[in-house]
Length: 224
Image 1: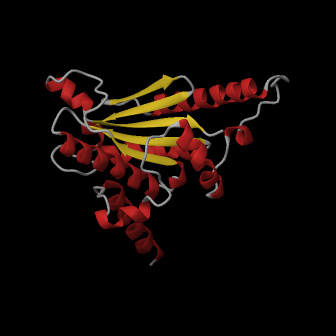
Image 2: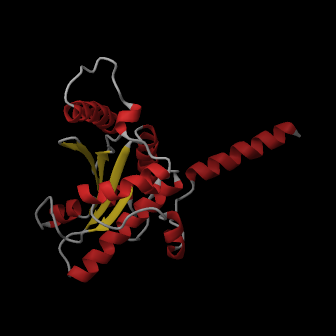
Image 3: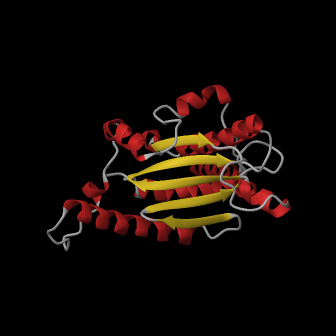
């Protein structure tokens, strides 16, 4: 009996591992994204959100990363040095874990940006996350749990199209990623979610360029 139970459990886990991910019904997204902010992640927005973030169990970088070798000096300089070290380690882990086509990890000052081309994480002709995309986002979520003293902005982008359609599609992509990360127990109080449409293209508008411009960017910023 125990052998049969073990075989059934193993088979169930195998089926679950191979199953296609589907986003939950749109009507439930507000539940998964409660605590998230639907605005650009500006410095002012982060400062305003910090009490909510801390109240939801969030941590500041200085509370989790405080090298004993830090010399006495200006607090702002010390905090910046701590942030640089923390974000450098985060960047390296993301870079090592995300060596896949259509995915890149970039550094912008103390910020780290993960660029996810749409076709690398979503179904080709369906507005939903693909199996490969789910695997990628699970990897990202695992690292985000380790480096939890960060805010994250999830921004969707499209190629050039009518502004109203572009904004709706880009926000849909960003929200789907946010919902998935929420399902992986990422604290939504860390999240800023926006759809920017066809703004800020990173490539031309030829066939290859349009594929690159359809993307989701996850920008990570130290919480301090």
